Length: 298
Image 1 (cartoon, rainbow, N blue to C red):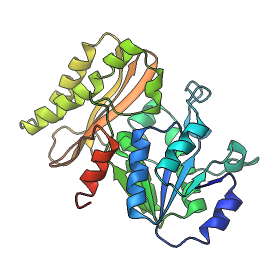
Image 2: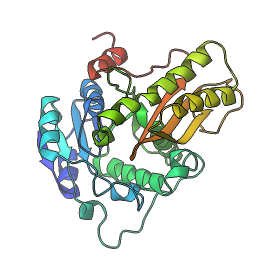
Image 3: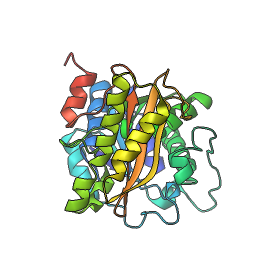
């Protein structure tokens, strides 16, 4: 496993590699959700590159950039265990040198949900992913379903800009009680951690109602909202039932839909989602189950 800190060095390495190359972009403080992406990338590509970069341009002025959890030595040990080949760990100055002034600013799919709550967030996401794709030139790039809107945005960007990279979205990895794994879960105290299960409960209710034949999107939104409001520590940012591709809010669910939400538990903002579509995975309790679902033949 090689740890690389500069763009020049990783480009030099890339010239020696045969395709396909898999890229797993991360902001570090890795958990089993990240490692699930690495496992899938390892199974599908002879070379796996993992980037670790806490991207400052996707954080708002009142968000947790300075306190975002970091532990590079721990991350490197985990990635060595997953047999990742190259770890790209650039500095802020390497990715955004003095005079940097070019941005990827998308419309439509970035204006709602997370985009509405976090102005400028997806400009930062789209820009850093474009830079990583240009630097690493991966054959495939791996993202988690937990960040569903991010996956939609990146897929749209790749299609619109004719980028030669396949975007692979891996099901959400969950704790045994359904809470989606997130680096921000570390912020939760024991009482908040228990309260945070309300996100999964609301999504489970949405899927149950849909499976029972409910097509009225507003009724599902209202049911999710009512359930969350019963949790004293929960404060709703948004509850959505939208088209799974365009992210436009639906009145009637007559196509694949995305039920998603953002909820503050104490001071911690958590997001989660479920796809309302036949046979769509709801996520797994451990990374190994993700691997087996995507590769049942192994």
